[in-house]
Length: 156
Image (cartoon, rainbow, N blue to C red; front, top):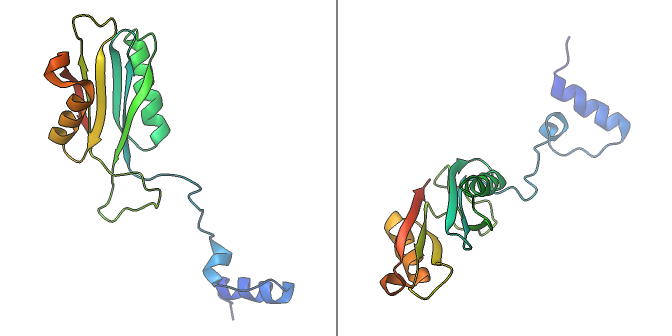
């Protein structure tokens, strides 16, 4: 009479003196997410020195979104590119990876220039809607007083 694979593993564990938890633990341990943040990622990179920017959305990993946004900014001849905003959308409505990083679906970059300024004023923000992200970015930039305009927006 053949013995079931799970039963076989449990019997081996018993004879070997191993602690027995759930038999499924012996067959296929579930890998932990060691700091992995779930979601669909986006990022905006900006170079205040020359006003160049790059963005990316739809990445499976945060680092991929950041690296690609930086690459696009550098390809646009940005001299001092850095990631200024990272945001994410959830894959499922009940996603909660416990990291505390908000699920904000949209981000915006606003850039302006006051007549006497050598470098542009700017603001980058994320929010749950495009309209909110654009408004926050405009506020951070300084609004119409600083001749701010939305340069880029993206939603995942």
